[in-house]
Length: 128
Image 1 (cartoon, rainbow, N blue to C red):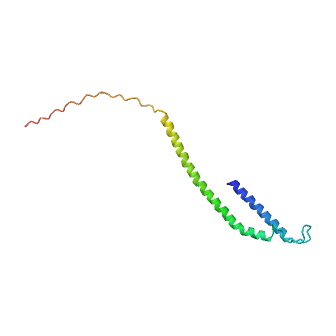
Image 2: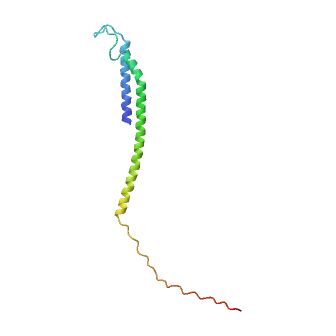
Image 3: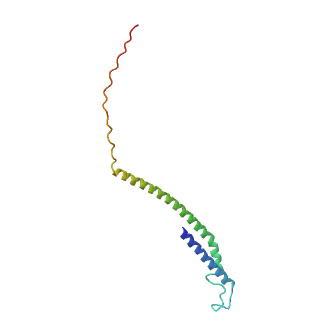
């Protein structure tokens, strides 16, 4: 993202430099130049070009902002999906590893033999 921002800033600076040079060339109307004395305004970077570019700058900036926002949202959603996928992968690998090693059984607990309890003695009630 920093490379994109740096590229965008450099592009804007170059565009501003071109505009400044075009304005400076437009303000100096030298009819005595050695190129063509009949042409007062350059064909490429003249007043009409600056007007067209100034009309195109706002929609271009809007489009760049919208694209940046959409790419940011797409990156967040992708990272979320990647995170869930990595978690599921780690759980699956740990389950495979856990099933591959047999768990040691605990030693059997010795059970002592206990005789059955004696039968209960019936209660006999005497009449006093």
